[in-house]
Length: 222
Image (cartoon, rainbow, N blue to C red; front, top):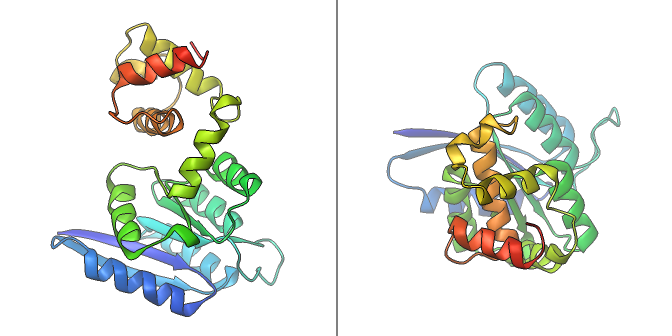
């Protein structure tokens, strides 16, 4: 049996109730979900700090627009996501937002690099259910608005940073994925995640490394 500890943070209780109902109704038979909820930054910070000491969350859902903490330290779901990443590094971080302005999307990916990024207006019950399972097993999962934004920005250098360029270069030299961390100082799972993001960036439908390298060459990244 897989025990999955979840934190959901949103200032609208009815939205949290909807998420809970979808996940409970669509979970796999061998999954047991334990769901904590918070409606503001103060409650969420207390839950994250408490969980980090003994039983960290497996996955955290953060709405971006939230009432800030009383001490002014945490003003949004972005701040909570960064806290969770810092003190629960194994937790999967999912960002949900009504915002679909491109600069917000860009900043969230750049600052948080979430395992899941869902625009609420894209969200259906099926997408939440599918996204949840994918984020648990092989993140990242981005909803359609985020994906289309990323594809539009491929012509710029926003996302293909030095590490991603190095991954592309080494793959093109025939280095196997499992050996990449001998050349790049990040874990194999972090490399896999970056490769997956590159395939989303370059709109690689078949998921093959050869297709990624071909597209990267055509776009001038190799």
